[in-house]
Image 1 (spheres, one colour):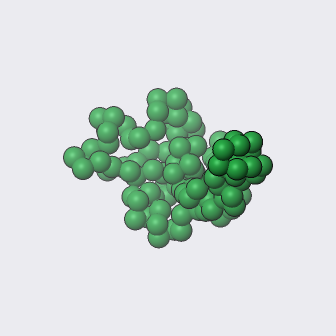
Image 2 (image 1 turned 90 degrees about the horizontal axis):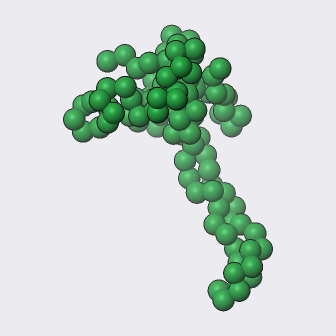
Length: 104
């Protein structure tokens, strides 16, 4: 099942790819005083979706089904885990169901 963003309506093959496209702070805690750590709220979150250009610059691309795939590579030109990509093994079945996989 693809992951669709309610902010930008883009669809992602994996949860981790969806997470990658969301950036910015969640909002910092606000305490009653510097010495009294009673939480009274949070600053406004500044989370946002990456633009299409920003996702492309990160190496992300869409597959034939229109789902965004992660294209994050490391300096060696290979993925950190030996070629499978940055997502965990738990996501492999999910990727297959969604037609995922980054072609090199």
